[in-house]
Structures are given as C-alpha cells and as structure tokens.
Length: 236
Image (tube, rainbow, N blue to C red; front, side, top):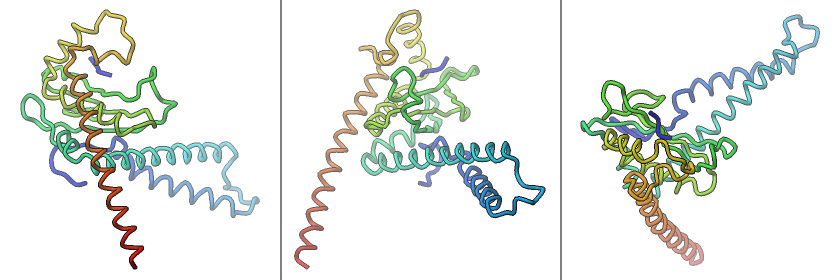
C-alpha cells in the first residue's frame, strides 16, 4: 500500500543527493567533449556524428535539470530550517513505533509534473515483515515527500511534514484507518488524507499553522534588522 547540515542518524535529506556528485562529474566531462568538438577540424575522422552530438546534448540537458532540481530542493530545505528550526528538528529526529529513526527525503519538482492538481505528496509503504515500519524508494525506514507547487512551497512542505509527523510513529493504525476511510469511496484526490477525523490531515494542518507563526516571527525580525542596519548606515 502506498500513500500518496551534518547530522547523526535519521534526518531530512535532499532526494536528489544520491546522484548529485556523479551528475556534476558527468556533466563536466560532456561539456568538455562538446567544447572540444566545436574547436576541431572537420577533417578529423573521429569526430562525433550528428546523432551522437544530439544524444550528448540531450544528456547534458537532463543532467543540468537534475542539478537545478537538487539546488532548488537544497534551497527549500535551508529556508525551512532557517525559518522554523523547531519544526525541522521534530522531523529530522522522527522515530517509528519502535523508537527507530526514519529518514525523510524531499524532492522539488516543477509544476508540469503535478499529479491531479496536488501541491505536494507524501509517499511511504508498509514493510511486509512488519506493518509498523515504513519504506520508500530510498529503502526501509524512509519516507519520500514531493513538492510540486512553486506557489508557497515552504507552506506545502510544512503540510507534508505534518503528515510524516503523524504517520511514521502510528503507521499500522493509520494504514488501517486509511483503508477503512478511503478505500472503495469516490473522493477528490485532495480530500484523501484530509477527512475530518483523519489525524494525519489534522497534524498536517497544525504544521501549516505553526509554520505560518514561525514565518511571521521571522519576517518581523528581518524587517527589524533591516531597519537597524539602515539607521546605522545613515548615521555613518
């Protein structure tokens, strides 16, 4: 069943980090080869064919996009940690029903990748051996969050982290509730996970509210600091 900073142990991680070093290395090699080809004499017999060049350019575009998504995800996580460090820490150290730490991977994807108007998505499954332990494409004791929206992505991330906050330590009971509440019923996609009695949805809304409070405090401090710096500059 699937529901759609150096730290020790479990943590919030960039979902693109596994391939980022390799992607940067390969991109550098491909760009060097393309530049080398541009400066070569057309008489060389080992020059790339048009097909080979096109294939290489497509690969460069793909790697460039991957690196961009990694960087945007990294920026999103850094902003969230800066604005709401307490919320970040709660998920960064989250544990399951057995007090085992769980990694939470986050990916940012552009709007055209959105599924049925979903702004974000939390994905985890139950291990066959133990329904209290979750898994994702990143392995056992891991969760994947995908942020599709470029509008208020921090608030969307807060919402999805709220789902994680409730589901990971209550996985078995929540999956039972999920089956009983949503299976065999025709709900709009955005309603699934947000039934009035759904504690995961309630926690997600609570995380939104808490993040909004942290954001207001952060912006007020930022404005105050800006005013003080402006005053000091005017005095000098």
